Image 1: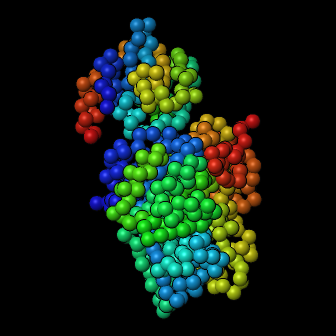
Image 2 (image 1 turned 180 degrees about the vertical axis):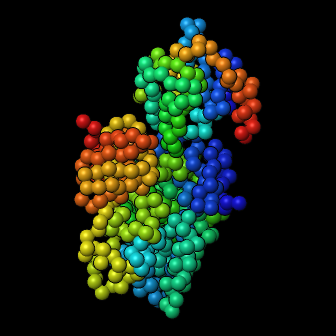
Length: 366
Length: 129
């Protein structure tokens, strides 16, 4: 039996079509996935992301521990700041991707990690193994629920619902910054390419937050819209666009690796440096289909520099056409073909994102 | 779920076919099929003039989730296709038995035979849960 988030009943009340996802029963949509996608690009949408795992890290060795564990460098974080990072194995493959929040100085734990639902158990084991002999303790926060409110009007609609002390400060947060009080953790982060907040609250309070946000006019959105929004926004999905067999360098995530200072010894560094020195053989590119049709995961891509494969693909509602990510030879560029159900269709390699902040970023097909 | 119309026949693969007074037949997919597929974003229709045998793959419907083949309920030649689906594939979701029709064929044998009637199709869908 799958787990249920504290918002399960809210989903049913909102007419959700529930599906299994990473061991959880989650809403796929509430009647119209494409409408939900547009709601986020045009106004504001509400997502239950309580299936994601929140882990607090405390102890005198917390900073050293995370600088060893993660490919990005938490030493760059001031209190109240966050970063996106990969966690690598010794071969440089990606164990998971996550967001690290450095909490305010007076917070009970100095760091908060948010990892994927489907990799939760693997990650907790990985965290614990790397913590051996270090002055850190890990606290999975199963007592928390997480809601994402995303879209151009999200901040305006959600801010009045926050505790008085945070109401002015929250809308002033810059991207990848967070504040909190005893009742809510507010971060200006998300997975849609739109402005908004991610809120962490006590599980028992989650339904009340959901109801207030719904009453404020934020549209409930399911995993279907979440996937097309992140695809348009050029954001990777773990297990599709990167995994333990593929490094950040061949997954469009080289920018998340903190190479400096050179002396910082993070897990996977050696393998990654070798790959960088040799020049990565592949890269993750964006792909736009030049005619009607829908590109899907695992379809073959034929470029002038050799073959590649689609890692994520689908219909992009903002562009009204199909877009994809594909792992292609490093030198591949420009026009290519995608094999869709036995037929080669013209496509074009582009640099993601495809759409963000309500706008398509890819020129129309000529 | 809407009622299965009694004025046409059905396949086990969830296509419908309705015989017209002029001897042609109109083909579409059922309400059950569109519900299972989810929102359609692309419909690939056969070219006018193309002939195919009964059960042959003749069209593709792609939803936000997946692509699905449409099989010809009857052998015949394509006389017309629903051009409106080019810009509005969602018509198949909102009106699968009406404005969401796929194409019109001239059946080879003149008659539509060997298919399920509405009651039998309803039982098939009910059985599939």
